[in-house]
Amino acid sequence: MDKRIDYIIAVAECKSISKAAELLYISQPSLSRYCSMLESELGLRLFERSASGVSLTEAGETYVTYAKEIKRLQSTMDRKLYQMKMKATDQISVCMTLNANTLSNAEITEEFCKRYPGCRLEFTNVFARDIPAMLAEEKYDFAIGPDVGERALFSYKTILHHYFILAVPKRYDFEDFSEEREGFVFPWIDLSRLSNIDFVFQNSSCNVRKSIDKLLALNNMQVKPKMEFANSILAIQAAERQFGCCFLSDSFLTYVTHQDSLKYYCVGDESISNTTGIIYEKDKIFNQQEKYCIKIIKKALIDGKDKILEKFMV
Image 1 (cartoon, helix red, strand yellow):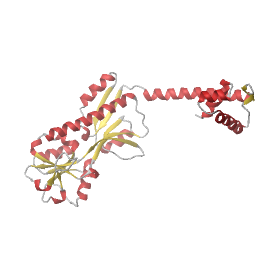
Image 2 (image 1 turned 60 degrees about the horizontal axis):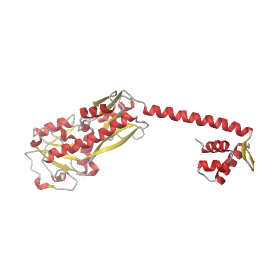
Image 3 (image 1 turned 180 degrees about the vertical axis):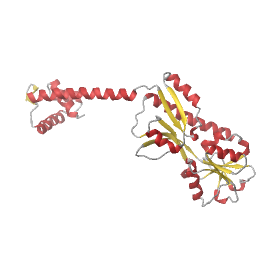
Image 4 (image 1 turned 60 degrees about the vertical axis):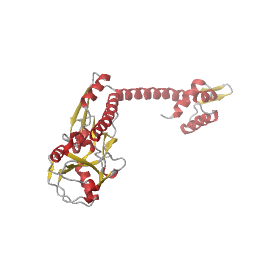
């Protein structure tokens, strides 16, 4: 709103430019200049000035009447918009990809319902490639997963960074090619030094496959996998059955059911890491329930990753 409206109303109510200036916390010359500039723009005198103070002209009376109405309407609009923003809902629907399943949905729902017992929290697993369409169609309030891009339509807030791991069947011995590196939870291995290795891959429809292909290209590796699978869980199961080495994000370690059947090595660097975060429509305004839901989801994701890594470091 034009601040001059507040200035003119203050002068009219105080009947003094100096008193109005004190009320508005600006200097008397500045306020006098604002009033004169407005009168010049309007081509009308709003005040009669005298030694005893100022009084409104007919034009001034009209200006102040409508200025007060404008302020009232502005206040009403702000209040209505705030109420819409804070409006309670009876259900929050969240879609998430498999790599977000370090979440304990039952624990999140239980904690959320303690604060908002009248609101149902619903989680659904989806493919990363389907998130943009589902959010655009308003099937879900927001999503949890990797960055889907499309910055013109969606915003993304990172919660976790994930590094890539090579899960290796016991028949392979890479100890001579591995080294301990700061910041990596498992020994780091130089992929370019490996040869005659069987691999099992996720197929090209998986979001993680793009990172795997990039990782291989950076290491000048051309790999024809022994088998391809529809998702990382199936690829992990094949690695556990000793079919071949499997690339996976550390977020998928939760799906390893036979931990001792494999050896684990970190591969790549920060340029190959992917992320888990909150994805939502660009202009979305979150209400208090959604904000609280996101808060406990963030904590659950971070705690979940820490617990998984602790399990593998024992």
